[in-house]
Amino acid sequence: MLITALFVTVTVIALPSLSVSSSSLTRLCSLILLSTTALSYHTSGGLESGISLFSGLIQASPLTMVIDLLLGTIGALAILPWAPLKLAQGPLSQGVFLLLPTNSYHALLALFSVSGGSILVSTASLLSLYLGLEMQSFGVYVMAALYRDSETATHAGLVYFLLGGLSSAFILMGSASLYASLGVMGLDEVYTFSDAPGVALSVTILTAGLFFKVAAAPFHQWAPSVYDGVPTIVTTWLQTMPKLSVLGLLAAMVAGLGSIPSLMTVAVLSLTVGSIMGLSQTRIKTLLTYSTISHVGFMLLALATYDVEAMTWFVLYLAQYSFSSLATLMVVLGFGYTLRGSGSSLRTTHPHAHGTDLESLSELTGVIATQPMLCVGMAVLLFSMAGVPPFVGFIAKQGVLEASISADCTGIAIVAIVASAISASYYLKVVRLMVFTPGAPSATMTATPVAAPLTAVHTFSVSVTILVVGLWIALPSLILDSIRSLALGLFV
Image (tube, rainbow, N blue to C red; front, side, top):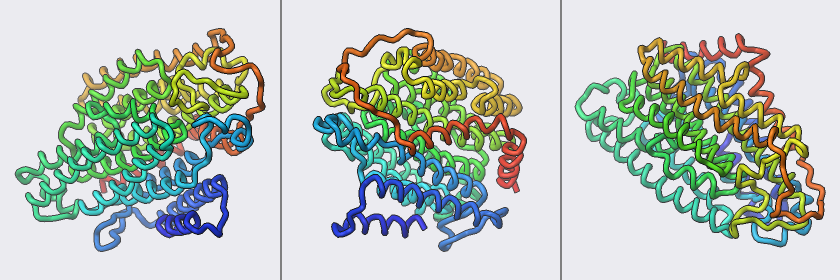
């Protein structure tokens, strides 16, 4: 269905006689993703043991269906939070990138990326693995550089493309080495002969490229500059969607191989780098990037201590991280639209900055006085990511730590606890700036007010994602039992 919708969307954009607005096309693509999600849910009933499709290239299983559900739901929400249309028609639209217009190609690239991610997470062959990965990757490369009038976005897109190509070369090298060693392309055959000479080295090379895709340390150096350089509406996509499919693929590989070399080392490095490097950050998106690296470390730790409980907590952690990260960036977008969009003109400190994107943490000082509801939502999300009970982030972290201790990795669990405590300090710093630090009028904005309310779609999207994060409090047993049943299916 996604491929069909992709071709239809390309046709709609290409035909000049069909004058469909960018906003309408974006919402249409969101509905397409939600419809695909509903279709995946209704067809997942008979997949207890998995189904092989397309001559063994694709393997549909309960795990792939869950990842597809997350890809469709989060993708549908991630392309919606554009600025109010009235701002684009006002005096703000006269400058370069003072306001990002809704872009038709953004929605098209979103469908392209989700299609590749769905193929990637369901792959059963080295061939479909690489094709799905590149289909997803090229979508996000172009999305990063889509706004070519911005110097920072162009630079970020180029960095992402060049280093992404390098990581793809590692994946291709590992795949070619596996084929040369075993003479097979199917992942099931690779798992069967995993003890053959050279397979461990080939898998290590392949997974090194996958670690780059999820910004795991020490393959994370590209992420801060890329995520901070692109507009926040693009960061919302880059920081969540590629990780869903790649981490789902890593989970399937761990299920087949039993373990992946260097997985524990990369998990510990990600936890350490993400927590310590985040302490010194003064830019919002850079801080959230190092937060993401730390969360990736927790998920890799769950995969490294592979058993039923660890996989249960991995799936829960992946879902809650995705919704929390998406909602946090949507709130940051909301702050930018309401705070930076409240003047008749903008003068940013950086000549190539995106005018309605918040850049520095100091811009959040005292915003509780003007945007109390956004502050409450941001605080809830930050508390959850910091692991404060009773939010779902605390339960997910506790579960991963318990699984690692049960697997006799107590030392690693202690490292994860210390890293979580360190990272909690910079989450709480943001809350302190918003709520407890008195703010002063910004010198970068004029005093002439212009109404800049959030759109109903943006408000609804933020509310839905925050409610999903808080849903754990209402239905903890139901959610955990469902995820545990899924995890048990991996060991049948």
